Amino acid sequence: MSTRRYAFGRGEDMTHPDSIRATLAEFVSTFIFVFAGEGTALALVKMYSSGSTMGASGLVALALAHAFSLFVAVAVSLNISGGHVNPAVTFGALVGGRITFLNSIMYWLAQLLGAVVASLFLRFTTNDMRPSGFIVGPGIGVGHALVLEVVMTFGLVYTVYATAIDPKRGSLGTIAPLAIGSVNRLCVR
Image (cartoon, rainbow, N blue to C red; front, side, top):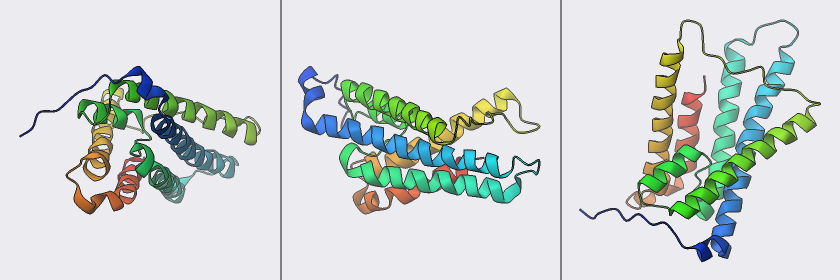
């Protein structure tokens, strides 16, 4: 069994064209995911603003929108940056020794900026609409919600690592976007 190699990275790696391309891929893929997923959420809020409740069909539409947008985001960035799209996935790759510390910092900044820019674009294109908020469901306490988030985030990171990052995956890399989007679909409540 080989030991993991952790690397800090070199400063000149941050300006290498491949690193810049990978960082831009993370920015664009995170932008796609947030813009499409949250855009669907805003559209559903607008559709059901007349007082009717969203119901199961709206929740299914929301979950599918998030799954498909993550599928596309991972598919477009998988061969460039590894298709992380999520800071937790980048952290998993860092802990697993598959990315340098400096590259992980660049990815995290790109992912956060991608999400912020997508949110600003949504705010501009929807005439200043804002999400209705994030709340836990009835009967679920804050502690239970935290445990659910930890378990679901672990499931997402595990799936990404097993299908896209792990070098022993074989040909599974071809189905990685589908598997990752499916796990995301299962986690959207």
